[in-house]
Amino acid sequence: MSNHDSIDRSEVKHMSKEAKQDLNADIITGEPGSHPLGTGIGGVGGAAAGAAIGTMAGPLGTLIGGAIGAIVGGGAGHAAAEAIDPTHEEAYWRAEHANADYYKEGHDFDRDLHPAYAVGYANRANYPVDARFEDHESELERSWHEVKGESRMEWNDARRASRDAWNRVS
Image (tube, rainbow, N blue to C red):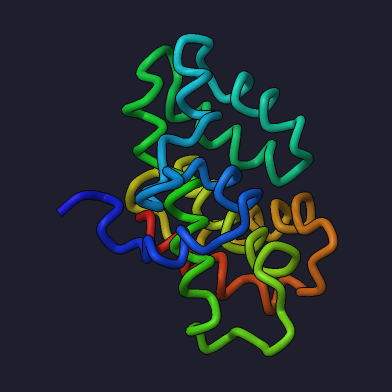
């Protein structure tokens, strides 16, 4: 079973052209590809390179780019980018967010929820394998305030989504 088997490809196939480009999805199969940030920085190395590339997309891009860069390190590129695949995580949560018990009618995935999920999945690699979300919640809350952008959610609402994303990639 591949890493992408749980993605609803039919949902990806029917997304707008812009959303597909953001996911780096194959236009025919809907299969998400390697995240372009992770693949592109393999030879450059390190969290600083990932964060610098991500900065072009604002604070949320910096968070995700830094996470990829930290994993990529000195040169694994494509393979390491797949270890934490923001494309895959975003597609998963885009398809599943409305099923969560904390979802509120009117929440927009891109504006409100994606930053909360990203705080969980993009920060997870910064901590030891046995780290618990609760033990690092104050740091994650700071990250939330840095990347929330225009989200209408406060940390008390966003923390559940962040914890779900953290646990999913753990």
